[in-house]
Length: 451
Image 1: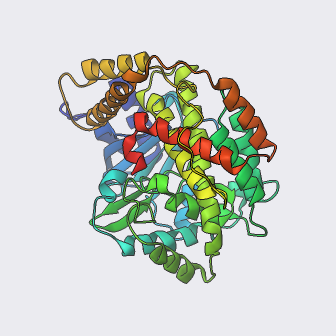
Image 2: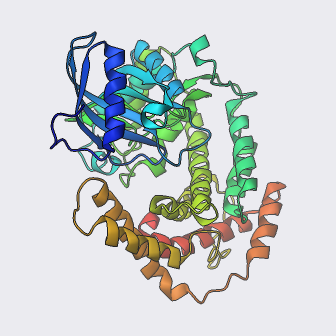
């Protein structure tokens, strides 16, 4: 049991006692939780800082760990904790810099959900901080080296829960995003344009390897400029190696440092040099643009799904609500990268004034609730993160308030255009209308994205 009553924790005491009993059984000694505190971030999984004392047994001593468990609202396509634990072990065996996995608990009577423990890596994963540091080509090179090691992971019965794509990875991805987009409310002609382009420009050949599938700034730890750990393996699977590279280098994951093509931290040459030196094979740089468009498409579909969880699913989560406002930025990048050779400019575009998204009232109410209930007494850690999101929501409202009287009279026009593009009949003028409409939307939702 906990002997230090001053231990900082935001998990209930009964759960901590159950955790101590379970850990004691696993180690064969006595377990004492000194500190257990939830770390900020983690919309899909929860990460908890765990300081643990073990007396006797197999692992005596003090341990600085992370406890990883499901968040209340996880994503169905993500791996469970037992599966992620298996992936983490195979990554460690391949030489990937990961937090050393320790032990898995599948007994839901302990904490209500499966969890595993791993050693805590030093440093920060905050993308907005890493992108503000000095250019770090050594970090970009190390990311290339580790990605090559990830791609070297071999098929194994322990990884049998991960299905291999039935066809070329690019083709499977396009079909998946088509299915997801069709399941969402409203029409999205700019994304239809992107999907059509991805289908028409699909690379031939290629190989299928084990991929991280969320390899980006924000999912690795850095301490004093050096890479310490690759995190968040819940989407790992078999795909084209260029998918990971396109995701890492996509503009949407550069955190504003757009001139640094590798996650806002370094150069493409450094990334490719590290990867090719470690793997012993060359990458096809001509495919990079294709997979960057795919990355923006994937993030746009995910953003729409998360927004729908707020709008129609009733999940009162500000991060989900704000995600809808990322979509125009992603559409802008897709349209910029896939414009026809005979592109034209138009003064007016297709209106996006009232596409399915959280209402202004909903944003205001939840932002006010966060400020009132979460920030009244303290501003640190997760509360500070929520304060920044609340501020962003209120800024969006203030810019959109003057547009409240705009009526969406173009829904039928958008629907017809989306159907036209899906058939492969989109023209340069249609592209120009879409681009102009997205730009007008961004003037309200995020003007900085136009810079």
